[in-house]
Amino acid sequence: MQSILPTSNRTILSVAELNAEVNQLLIQGFPLLWVEGEISNLVRPASGHLYFSLKDTKAQIRCAMFRNRNMKLSIKPENGLKVLVRGRVGLYEPRGDFQLIAEHMEDAGVGELQRQFEALKQKLSSAGLFDEEHKKELPEYPKRIAVITSPTGAAIQDILHVLKRRSPHTPVIIYPVAVQGESAKIQIETAIRQANADKQCDVIILARGGGSIEDLWAFNEENVAKAIYHADIPIISGIGHEIDFTIADFVADVRAPTPSAAAELATEDSKQLLTNIIQNQIWLQQRIKQQIQQSGQMLERLESRLNLQKPLNKIQQYIQRLDNCDTRLKQLMNQTIKDKQQSLNNLALRLNASKPSNKIKEQRENLLHHEARLKQAIKNNLKQKKSQFKIQMATLDSVSPLKTLDRGYAIVKDNTSQTLITEINQLTAQQKIEIQLKDGVTTASIEE
Image (cartoon, rainbow, N blue to C red; front, side, top):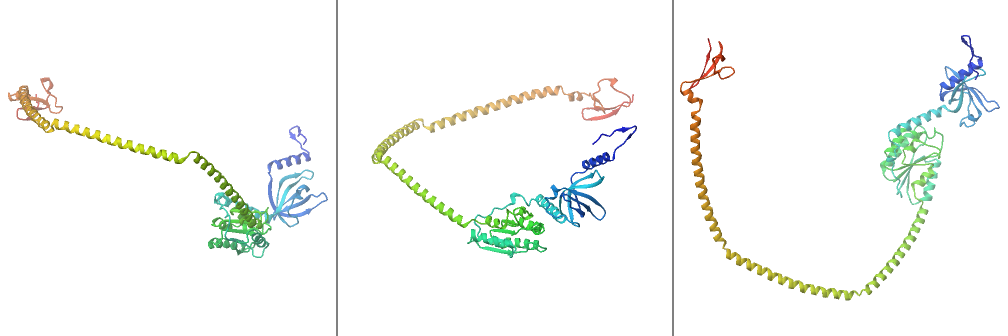
């Protein structure tokens, strides 16, 4: 882009420069976006590029889709087709036309279904319906298998063929349902709940053949997802082809890429199982034979060692040692009894010599003697304390203020503060005083 040169006070742009500036602003100002509209004025030149207009009831925009992009389209663009276009806005500089450079295009109906699919997927994922902790393990050897699918489709034939080949002894219960159309989602939900309530099967196969997103839509319904989630019996989904994914696949306990693969996951191959049993039987027989040989060799070695040690001689030696121990034990017991008897006799003699009755009598006399001395000491002490108390009472009485009162004296106090009055200057006119006499207390007022 050429530089912008100011002329006096004006900036003058060429038309090409202006269009280039506008184009850059559009490219920078708008991110990659989706536009929905109807195709019109579609042109396919020899270059392989596509030029068309995208319109609705109120406006239109010119669009270009280059060959390297439109070669990857899964739809065939036609006039009147309602589409979703992903692209970037810009300006076709030579003509100054505002346009949309398309990078991807899809049928608007399919795009709406895809948006619904993503919205429901996000909702159920947030609610925990896809969490691995809720997935149930498949039974290793199911006793009975339930199949929920169309009774006339190719899927049921593929499933039955695989089950007959791999596990012909396993019974199959078919719950026929419509797998597309308005009533399909209700029939599928009802069949899942019925199979779960019947409790006749150990595993459920939910299947149908391939198809478009519209054909598989019954397996993207919320009621079907919740029926799978709340089932107690593990469910294998085998819906469409390997590249097809439905909401039911995310909720199911196990997802199989095809209905046939679902049947294989539900069962063990009986031929392979028989081969494994035979191999295990041969291995077990060899192990038992080997163990018997090893045990026999061990037994021979132990027997040889036992013979070398002459166990009979050892037993006889142990018997002799036991007899010797028995004799010594009896001798020791007899000697111990004699010693204990002698000690008992000595104690009896000492007990008789000490005469406990005399000891008791002597101690009783000592006790009475000490009791008499204690009583006399208490009496003497009490008499002494009484004498001291009388002396102290006389002394206290001699210094008692009450004695002073008996001689005609009085005690004077301020009536309010109870302060003792000893001098005349403590008195004032109209002062209330309290006078304590020998036999009581009275109040008075100072007049002068």
